[in-house]
Image 1 (cartoon, helix red, strand yellow):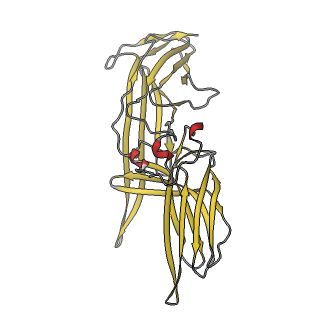
Image 2: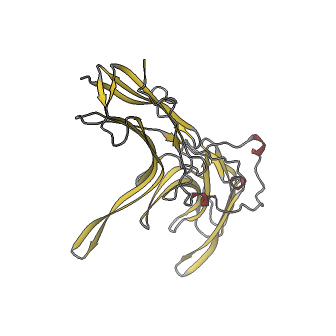
Image 3: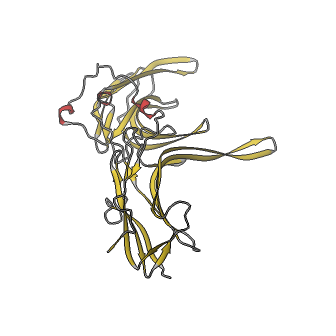
Length: 350
């Protein structure tokens, strides 16, 4: 009896062994390739496509002299489909595959009505999509192969909510030796909420320092990931980029009139996943010697579809910037996907 020399999944969109990328509603197509050096018997050739979000972490809890490790996990299944390319479920009938290379085409349409979250990999969870193929033979161990594919989410920053300006203001008074100095206030504005990687955020800020201390204005973009499981949550925060302005002396007022902070290459904001949020925010803050920073936080969305030319002018800062766009990350119903096989015979030889 022959030997299986190779068993692979080849996506049509993969080029030079790269991981292919798709969006919701597109077809994932390819071939299962079986190379044998002589005739073999096969009970079944199964294919299995899956998309899911998965969160997990462990925590150690101590009570007196006792301690235990608690595991938290949560999973959302976006789709799962199985199909037999060769064989029939529950049947012991075998199929003879002659020597040579055999290809079994497949096609899978991704859900579109319920948007799929983009592929993501974080410290405590991931959103992943993959396909497996399994070859079952009489009296032999099955052969299994797995290949991932990437799903991206099209986030259009031309959406009205993402074109609205963002404004925040905060003030604090510093106390020293039971005496309060004058207040320090910070007001920051940006032209819109939506940006794409490579763009620069123009920051407009007013700093009023009526205290006796010097303050240093700074701005930074942070990426925050929040993972949810069993009513608990785990959060990580990462600095993306930052800038620093000139110190503002006590009793002085300064302003930023379009200070630019460039967004480096980063993945877009993660939408449509109820157990993982990956969000960005612009923090404008004053570093105050001997005191806590004075900080304002402006949430931003990193999208994939850039600003259209007719939207390139800054919008009016006096317009109302509306509801929180992050509400799109609420739980969404699972979508449906289906296989369409154009060839369900024993494969064609090449």
